[in-house]
Length: 231
Image 1 (cartoon, one colour):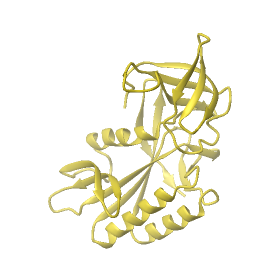
Image 2 (tube, one colour; image 1 turned 90 degrees about the horizontal axis):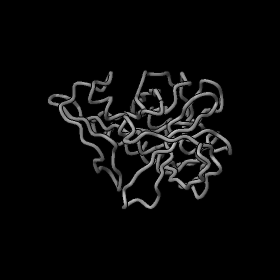
Image 3 (cartoon, helix red, strand yellow; image 1 turned 45 degrees about the vertical axis):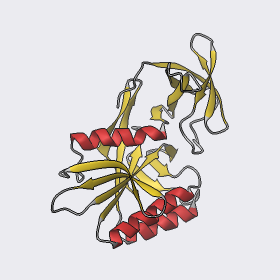
Image 4 (tube, rainbow, N blue to C red; image 1 turned 180 degrees about the vertical axis):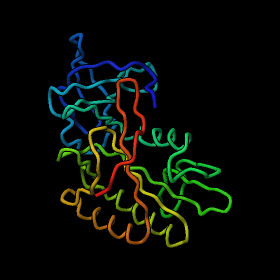
């Protein structure tokens, strides 16, 4: 997924109110930008970190800048959780291992109680596949990506919804998309959210599949790269 406009780099001053940040650009200007990440962003929001912003001239948007990338632990990290579905959609369109061969792909399909699944894959003679995507950015131990980085009751509910689809005879997949390229495995951060860890264990025991991929992150764009191990 390529960025619509060239990114501009600067230094993070602070991230606040979850969805806002102040950045000093290389030309000395201090600008306010939208932070498209509702999580804790542990390890990615320290003052002085180099960041990349994307500008926009859309009059419908309140801010002229959006935060897209941060450099942390020597790696570029995509912090836009909303971009994860677009990254996966591009990969699915080009043929993603174990998720190819379906005739149709529908995004944001309503199912269960007040839930939407990120993608519903369908094909003649095949079980419907309910695909949920989770953006992963947390790395506390070298090479190990973890999810979640904060308590997520919504994420736990999604796991229960996926398990219910398996019980109805469908296929359900949880895809961890690591928006960084310096991790070779993924784990659930049970110490951060024990309830999510319990829901994850129950869902996988019920037959929900787990897939993990890392990304190639550059100032030009973010693209799904390769499968990595879970656990």
